[in-house]
Length: 145
Image (cartoon, rainbow, N blue to C red; front, side, top):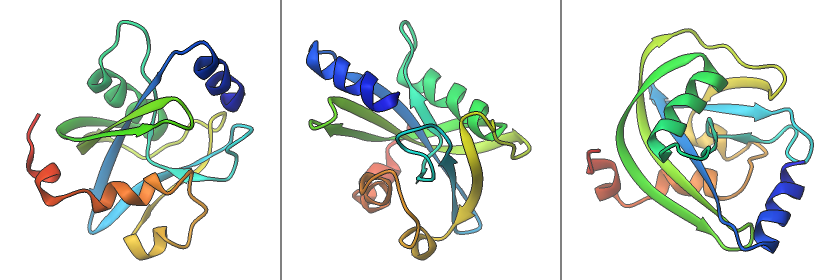
């Protein structure tokens, strides 16, 4: 279903905006494993579509809570990843957990876990962009919201 929505949006010239949150704890990063058709079994950053009337920041906070159970605070924007092939823009944020306990929405996700960079390289990821985020220039990590 996601692939169909992306193809339609691209066909009519509409760009799909998504927002994702990078959460780190003890040198490991939180990833969620998708359960929805088309991307089932793939791992990625918590996040999802920006709704009409919502800012990327609001979407990132909402999606993080929906997908992980954590109430997060966005610390800084890491930038945007433009995907011409898919007609989408991914807004990437560095966040920190304010409170909550890890839980997943079993309708959308199969699992969630904390992974080191080395462990992430062995996972089936949603795309190369998942790892590329961790290789952004150091200045991106210093830019406060």
